[in-house]
Image (cartoon, rainbow, N blue to C red; front, side):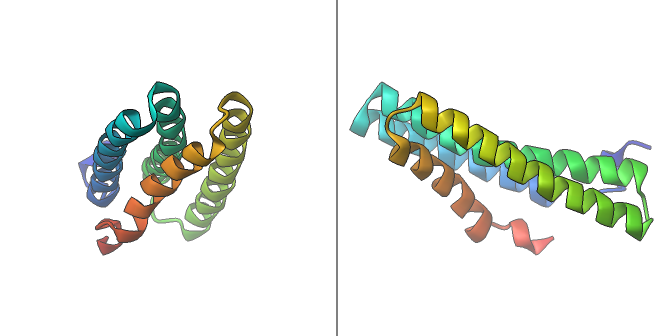
Length: 126
């Protein structure tokens, strides 16, 4: 049985990914019209960091369902590992982004907008 076949309720995280992507696409177009190509690429990169975090979380969710199943200690270990990897990914990608993109504020804005979807989305209904 695959993890997506019922072992995991992946609908909420899939909805989150959808809304993050839609919001990011719309706001990237706005930034492109308002600030130009360079700013829109930096904005997309910042939003991509947030989407990457969500994808990593989904991957850990599916992997936990496959390997840990109902074992609470294994699930907790997987949760801690997920948090650590998400922090590491975020820090590394921000470090790369801040050295590559001059408009760092735009990069941060893209990240914040994609993260706001997490706060105000339907993700917490799971």
